[in-house]
Length: 114
Image (cartoon, rainbow, N blue to C red; front, side, top):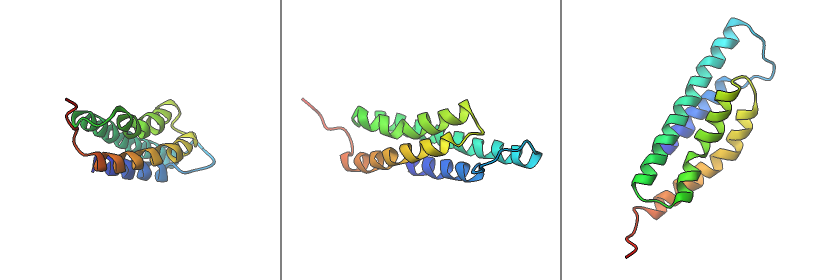
């Protein structure tokens, strides 16, 4: 559920900040600030899902896939909150998160190796 919440929060934030011409007017600045907060909340949820995945003993590649939205989209939001690069990063990161959700549910808990 954390991965789904992360994706939903990030999409809500990206939707609020989907503008192609940035003008420093108060309404647009506030919209960008609120959208960035949604993206950062989704990034925190993604990092929490990564920790839970590690706790459950999933393989490390699943951890990386779960953390992809936090690193790519959240990182680009922190670096430049007014660029469209985070939207392009979401196109790359979300398929990884969905794949991690599928394989994490399929993999289940860690199996003993010995």
